[in-house]
Image 1: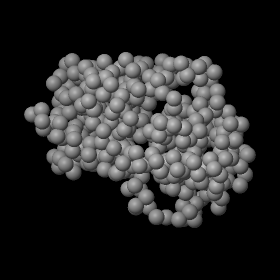
Image 2 (image 1 turned 120 degrees about the horizontal axis):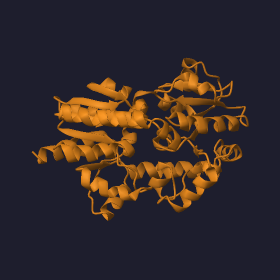
Image 3 (image 1 turned 120 degrees about the vertical axis):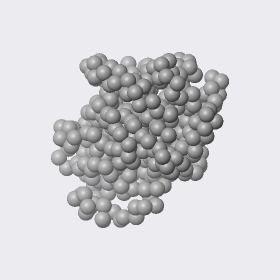
Length: 378
């Protein structure tokens, strides 16, 4: 079969690449065409655009790049129609993907599947109408989404979480020691605090400079940044301390050896939990007081990190908007660098989350369910 996939960020590239591998196992004749990244490209097929050409975040960056965004959207629509895939698989990235879904549903007979649901349970719940109208099947990786969509009379498929697969596979294949890791990356012989400051330039700019300022309180540790795919090393230098280091393409290796982490909200918070690394969630935004007000009164959920959302309670501390200050980062991080009650409670919370998510095999289950749904409609 012919599969057309669209992702808009690094985490989508990772999960879509694993899904593609699983689809190839189930369907040896699988052909792929996609908007994606390097990991998807390594699996095979034709990459039409790199996701970094789509990844604009925040009102001003989006406004400045509207022409590029619309041009890519128009090209994507035409490309799907021309290629006539057996299925269109959308991966998260709702602002772009739901527009594509609407067009494809109106103008073609190509079935539209959504892998990794848009987070409409957090805000923009009205998008459920678009999903029910334009998406044939939805595959969820978060257990609490099942109840949300059932409430809207829209059945979905929960297939487990691919982060569990990715972390488990990495840990089984990588047994290197701390000495080997620091030697390979020319790092100091000090305990590591990992900095995962986001995958987009605006996120990195807003968060990393404050993380670096907080780092000055911890001279006995070395701070190592996980460089995001598609972001040039020179971009980071404007926001880093002289003694901080950066590694690219090694986020899991970094987490495997980290004593703690400062993490911008997203998939990275869950990956950090699966490695059982104590973390502080740090997400700065401009106009912090306004954003905090909107968060309290507009968002439909109490938390922004996947860790807390899955647990349905505060397992990790979230420093968001005006709460993301250097002083607060230092205070929360200090609690996690020794065997404190706060550290133990967090690790116990991680274990509970791992239990809730279930066993590995999400990508394989998703591929099997996708093919089952496609074959059922033939």
